[in-house]
Every structure is written in structure tokens, then in C-alpha cells.
Length: 476
Image (tube, rainbow, N blue to C red; front, side, top):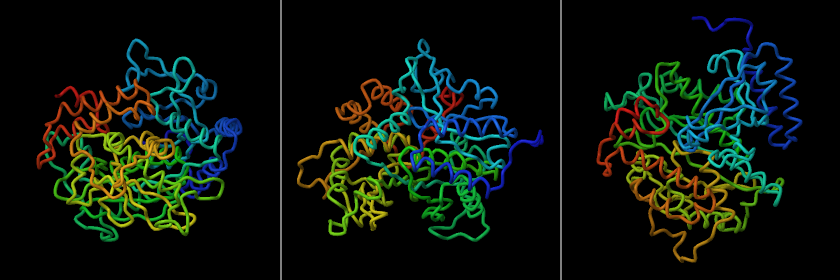
């Protein structure tokens, strides 16, 4: 069926990039929320070729949800958008199901029509509870509130960029069919930085990079990764909430592009044993005005004491945070030291087995790289955990804190136990969210063998939160 029903909006990639970079500049310059809201509402009113506004929000586990609102409806009802929270895993119970969506008009995106459909624009929303307060289970809202608070109190801007690795497998719905086939098929057997200019993996990467560029990601580099059919597409730093939004968009657009090509983009941390898994190395820094507070030309590894203290607080709470960073059964296959696994609770400038690395930097780029984050983690929860801990956590007095000697768990059951018993997690998330998150993770863990073994089990994929649906869950 043709998608060209009427004269719906379909902008060129050059026009899209211009509009999205302008919107990104508004976010960076912290243009007042009411000014951006009025600007966007006027645009929607004047642009007759838009049929719908897609509002995106994220559940507790990190699964992205999309709701399409008719443009004329949202213009009149954008302050009272409701949805059934009991239908979202980890949100409200059935008896208290009504939740609202508050539109974050600063997080507005123009999108390529060949990937997202004609006549649509995207905007992120925050979930609001019945009493009008931010919903505790919506970690985007929690992260945004914390980032705004740090800027108001200290003038801090929380910065991040993630290096997100993934695989491209042959066939559509390869993850959902894994419990039937028991295997994933590669589309390329190249390797690190190596593929033919027009092989399927390179075509996928090139197409995805073009879409990212059009959406204002400001790409840096892209390449095949170490493992067959593995990829990574890097883009520039952004303020923490925008950076987490981009992670969600990155995974959404790559999945759709892969599907358009008859493939599956997969973000399981370790979908195939015997080769490198996928990570989401999370680079973070804190700035004040134009000053990078992590940079000190005379500091150890040129990282300022502010940055070392930030890093030490994360090392101190590494076991508390592990389930946040590695939220699936499959993630613990990745923490295998034979494949550059970042499972050592220590910091290093050179050793990629350390959970935190201090990359070479300068006054603009100095940062710390949290390597222990898996690509299926909730990006808002992960960044909130990193920044909240790095700025407000405690520092252990252990002499060997940075030197190592401790390791992250090699199974999700241990990580769940550490998370459930953590006083720090209770402090930063609240007892209710802490309990609900642990309960969700335990439900998946209980459907999988406790011992991972040497073969990826169908249940690891079947009950993975990013491919969850009622049909698969009910097949247990």
C-alpha cells in the first residue's frame, strides 16, 4: 500500500539536519521552556502537512514506547494527555492506572519520512502522576529533575556521550524467533574497521549514519566492530537528558533501518558466545560555564581531583549500581575477562578490563568512561545512577579502591541481591522503585537457568526486556 496518501510532510535530509541542529542549540542554550513550547505549538499550527505527533516515553526497564496523537488533538489537549499506566511493565497497578504525559517541547525532532513515515514529528514526554508530580518510575523525569537541580544550585551541566555497540543479524525478528531457531546468522564476517564498501553491514551503517546526521546527532565516526556483523556509530556529547534521548533514538532508528533491509539490529550484550559482546561505554564529564571541571593539565592522567573523586564514588558503589548497568540475564555473559570485559572494579588509563577508564583528553574532551554499562540498560537510569553517585555518593576509605581486587558479579542473581540490599539505591530511587525494578529483573532471572553455561539459551532472549511481548512471556 502506498504511504503517499496526501501532501504530508517529507523534508530533505539537509532540511532535517538544519531544523534539528537549531532545536539542539535551543536546548544547549537553555531557552526558557515556555518560549520553546510556544514556538513549537505555532509551528504545528502553521505547518499543514503534519498529521500526527509521536510522543515517546520510557518504562522502568528502558523499553521505549511510542504514542501517536493527531496533530489537531494535541494542539488542544497537550496539557492533559493521559494513558493507562497499568499496561506498562513496572508502572502502576491496575487499580491506580491513570497517568499523564507531560510534553518536553525542547526534545522535539524532525525525522526522515523514509524511516519514520510521512507527516510525523517526534517529541519526548515525561510521565506525570495523578497528583501532578513527576512519576517516580519515569527515570527520564528523575534525570531531568536532577540535572536541572545541579544547574540551578551549582551551575553544573552534566555531559555524556555513549559508544553503543550492536549486531546486525540476518532476517527480520531474529530475536523473537531465537527460541525457535537457537541461532543468529551473521550478515558480514568482516572485523574491526574492516568491511567492503558496499557489503550489507557497511550499507546498514552508512544508512543509519545518514539518518543520525539528519536528526542532529553530529556524528563523529562509524565502523564495524571486532566481532562479525557488529557495529558502532559514534556521535558528539550532549547534556545528560538529551544524550539519553539520543540513545533511545539510536536504537529505534537502527532497528527500523535493519528491518527495512530485511535484518535485525540486536542490542543483547552477548548474543553469540565465543566472540566479543556489545557494550555501551558511557563517557561523562561535568562542566561549569565553558570550563570542563574534569580537566587539569597537571593532574594525574590530566584528570582533576574533582574527576577523581567522581570516579572514586562510582567505584565505591559499583556493586550497588551493577544491576542498573547490566540489567539482563544475558549481560553477565559479557562480563567475561577473555573478551575485554570491563568486570574489574577499578580505574585505569589503559586497561580495558577496568570498569572505568580515563581516556586521553584535553580541556574540552577530558572525561571518564564507564565501560561496564551494557547496551540494553535503561539510559536514563544509568546516567542518573552515574551522575547522582559521582556527585553525591560516598567515597570508600579502602586503600586499593582504584587498584582493583574486586570484581562485578558474574550472574544476575548476585547483582539483584546487591541491588535489593543497597541503602544507596534506596536513597536515590526510593524503596518503591527499588523494589519494583528488582522484582522485574527477578521475574526474568527465574525463567532462565541459574548457570549460564556455554550456549545462549532461548529464554535469555525470549524474556529480554527489549523484545518482550505478552505472547512470548506467556510461552514459559
